[in-house]
Length: 276
Image 1 (cartoon, rainbow, N blue to C red):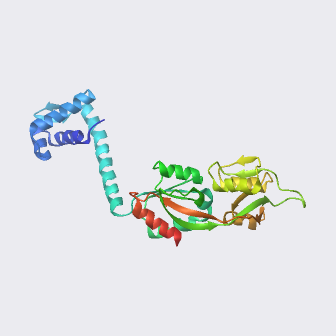
Image 2: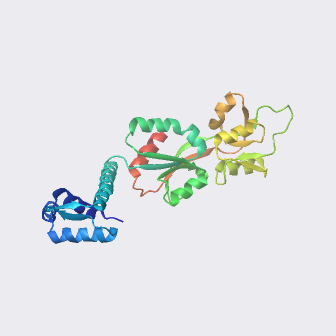
Image 3: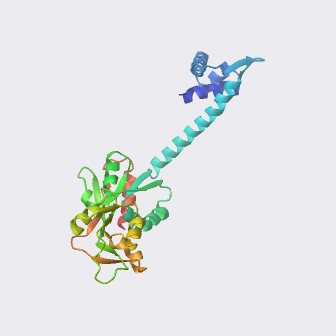
């Protein structure tokens, strides 16, 4: 891999036309410039500069190396500037959230982030609580919104919302027809899936990856499920599904993060906005 410092030495020689003047610009001795050029030429297997009419000029290979080198140096300079700026402002934040939370709770939070933390570089990914906690443990996320059942004492956490779960059923069922005996659920690792087992019993499961997909299958009469009441209200009000209460406690959503995260300043700001 080309060393940025070697590229800078080549640029200095090409721009000044002289090993001596390049050394003066770079603040080093001539032998250092010569050694750097030789090292780069040996690495690339090509002569990069040649003497013509008393000047050191780039060869065709040297011009190609300078073209790539300029892009590498500019990209490195840009990356350094942006990283320094983010350290002084809001560190980048990788947020993971449950699908239902992203659909119902997150839009107003994202609007508040946009309005008050506009410089923050935020990336968002959805998954089950189990997937999100696994990602937090391996460093793929800085902050996750997960079900309280997945709390881990090794991480800092703060409660955000309480969700009342309801049974979600097809709307168009003839009177007296029992609910379809299939549970339509998210992937393994979802707390609502586990509650389905507890409340509905050991039913066959149809596994889907999105909230829209699950509700669509319920509305089509393919089965039933348990979901937060707030997450299904729109479909219930449209008459596509019906809901009924279930026994048991509400499910709390937690914000969970590494206490020593480099993005702690951004985490604290986002959690405060989510709690507002």
